[in-house]
Image (cartoon, rainbow, N blue to C red; front, side, top):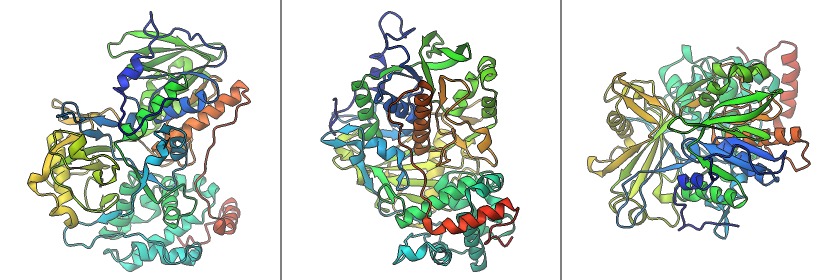
Length: 582
């Protein structure tokens, strides 16, 4: 079986696709495959590659179609023309990778992909020094710890002490901090029925009572933790979504239910560490990859999908027939393909058009000198654009950026995610959506330098160059940017508008980070989980006897079982949670 070591690269994703186009047609109108086993996967991002992986290992004959780039938002993006002297191009990316300990689906997939003498899972390394930084003369915030005895923490009183100690001391009035912690405890002890029936319909902003509390409370607790940890807008995101992720992070800190270290990153650029080896493995198992082809519409007959009509960048269309179709596209690309013929077969898919997307996009600063901030992720909690970052060179095991990438002058990479594109900046006074690419780079640096821990570490001469995700494009006529790679936002009461993996069309299954999953957030983990549910639905529909794809649930501490059972009874009686004092 084909393997990659750390010095071997695929020539390009395009070459993968080109090798899969069948002679004579550009596409295969019908596969020369076993009837009943032919699968078309529409999308080559996290969901599509996961679906292909699970299906090919169960004997299905799989072809994946992707219009733009293998790996989707999870890939790294070589900055064309930046390499010299035998070095590779500098590695840009949509955003830095983050693998918290409560991720299970993605790491399990990675451990099934060969890499050298081991697996891609071996490329996950612990990030041990995350920091939440403040601007001006504020003390830095949130150095997380779990205390001497995790067993004592998982009681209401123990969690109360732990959360007050962890979140306190950062200008939030003590009585407001106490209130915030009590709201967290209400959620942590709420049953699943209350979370879906009540908290799904309440915004996080309202749940924590931010409107009537101080600016530090709003900025640090209600907004800062939400936007920086979950990349969701606190005023519109559902309490169920934010609370579930907050709960996962709390138990992650305790090492409860974790797959691995609290925080993990890759020890190479993403394509080298993960995406390229994955493509090589899947090709070795027989998966066909067709690049430059995106779904336009489905053809239907007899209550089923009979073919997919695809188009290349020039608009030239082709059709492909198969027994099974896996949608693995982001929601904004799915909605235009839901023609009246498709909606007649599954009217519920019409609700997808009500789902909202927003922007979370990365920018990389290539540095002429190393910047030693912390061995982990950095949150700039006072930045209007909700910036988070990672210095990457320290984690790349056998790579030296100066030796292996760029022109020899780049020593390190500061990779920054921009999570709020609608707030005015401090330099140009405009939201990121209304800034040119140059203004975005200038504004991000200005906001980072306002945070005193790093301000002196980024002098003017240290910036070699920068790279902003090419999905963001400046429209001079409109005076604002467009974005080809938005992210689903879990707005209040949107769960019921999101589909399950199984549709009412027997041979069409749905995957992607907008599909209902246990993790319930637009992430790599959510996309991977959704693909496993889609594969299992396909296996059920096909009558396959193959083992079902393994799925995981977020950790639920047994210590709170009785409290949640009590809350379930109270909810059915129309009563508040025991800890909810209003």
